[in-house]
Amino acid sequence: RNAGNTCTHAEGSMVGSLEFCTGKLGARMILVLGHTKCGAVYGATNAYLAAKKSETAGVESALEGLLLDLAPVAEKAVADMGSHTDADEVAAHAVRVNVFHTIDFLLKYSAPLREKVKSGQVEIQGGIYHLDSGKVEFMGRSPQQSTLLSTNLGLPPSMTREGGRTLGYGPATQGEHGVRTTVDSAVPAEEALKMLKAG
Image (cartoon, rainbow, N blue to C red; front, side, top):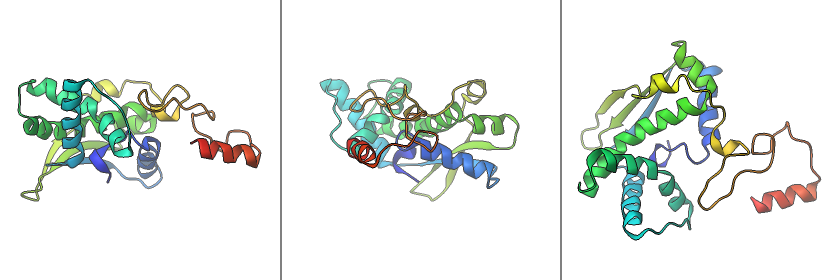
C-alpha cells in the first residue's frame, strides 16, 4: 500500500519486496490494486494539466515529486481520452492506466519476476477497488505483458549509476548499484557521515 500505487519512489524496496515474496515466501499472485477517486492520481492528473497550461515545473516537496512521477500516467490518460475531456473523467481513466503502468514497471525492471511470470509460477494481475460499492473489478494482465517478458533490463533506474531522476535530483553516483551496499568497500566514519548528510 502506497500513494498512487507507485513504484517510482523507493522502487528498489517495492520491487525487492515482491521478489522476496514470490521467491522465498512462495507467493504466486501479485495483485496491483488501484481504487476509484485516488487522490494521488487525481492530484497528478490535475498537476499535469496545470503544468501543460503554465509550462512550469518544479519539485518543492516529496508529495510534488510523487505527483510529478505520475505524469506519464496522466499524459497517457489525456492521450486516450482526448485533450477536451473533463479533468475528472481523465483522472478516473488515469487510475486504470496507473494499474497497468505499475504492472509494466514490475515486469520491465525485475528479471526474477519476469522469469517467474514466463514459467507460469507467478501471475501479475490488475484491479480497481470501487469505493462506492466495495467491489473489486479485475482487469487481468497488462496488455504489454508479452512484450515486456522479452525485455532484458535489470534493476530499477534509481538503483543504477545511470539512473536517478531528471528533475530535481541527480543520478546516483555511489556504490556499484547506484546505492552503497555490502559489496562496496568500507569508508571511514567521517566520510560515511558526510555521505549521509549529503543524501
